[in-house]
Image 1 (cartoon, rainbow, N blue to C red):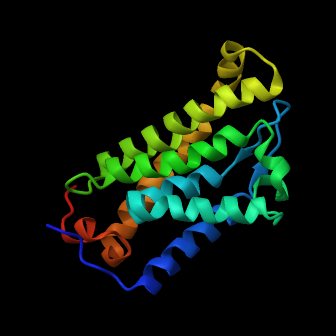
Image 2 (image 1 turned 30 degrees about the horizontal axis):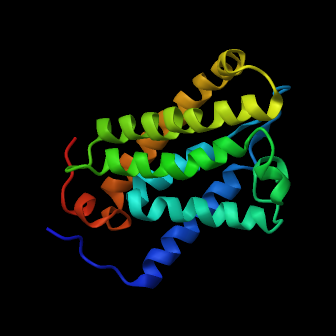
Length: 191
């Protein structure tokens, strides 16, 4: 069964809304000595994957990264420009793209359920982002991979809270406004 087509304008609007959400959530920033700040931007990435699905979610992330690349201050702490892609957070940003796809694939596999949404937010929004971010952070900072991974444990409780919040928000949105979701998620939902 193929996914019903939606007007291009509607898809572009949804991508733009989630790109804006990711940017706005980046204004919530707590700087850390490691050079990688605590932000709410990954909450936006998780929500994009949960709501937009695997095809459209990475587009919203790519819009944010493109805006950052041209110098707009859309990243955490008002950063932007090509230098942001050379720093310790570069791998995490690359992980957002792949992570949003993984979130969407897991959450929208067959029937959208709360536990698939939670699993997707955890696997894509945390595990995948860390798998990309930690090695790049270690390389850029010159700190060995083990200690860098260990120092990243400080982010885990916050990221778990973000995954729980993303799951709760996506499930509530799915119940309130199923048209926001890709075709199969609109048609079927199980608790």
